[in-house]
Image 1 (cartoon, rainbow, N blue to C red):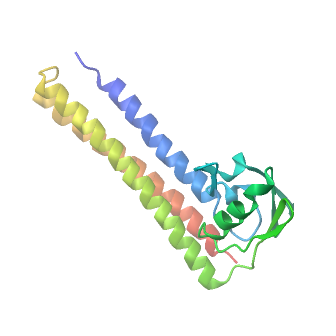
Image 2: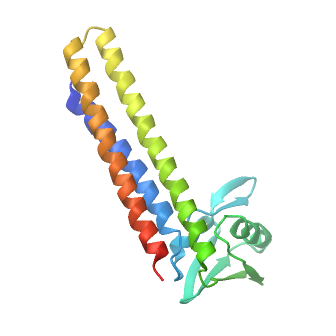
Length: 187
């Protein structure tokens, strides 16, 4: 006989992963001060594939409004500069030998709105991921019922519990987004 606790544990773990991913992505959205996390979502084309920037360079914050990227392989400078410029964070990297300086401009109202939109996109991706986990869980439960491993009543109850779990995680995603938007909008 199948056990809902095992299914719920797996779904919770996977939904937690989506929420953790959202938090990581949001930590990269700057709110006016420099942070190495700002560049974490940046992927650099290196050696024929896309790699996280921290796998091709060292990121440091020498001052409040400046990030430096020490590129390990000199041939990667142009790729790193292009990746930072094109990442959608409104940054203008300036190469200087093997070092790339990334000054952080003062946040304008327009830029705050762009950051809030980007945060919204990250949150929507997390919601989609949570719903995908829900779909997988529901298919798993329906398959168990088809194989007559659980009753129709159990199926209905389990599907309800999966939906409640999904709703709980969607609320957590929305709360995380709301908190980040408030942080972005603070002057």
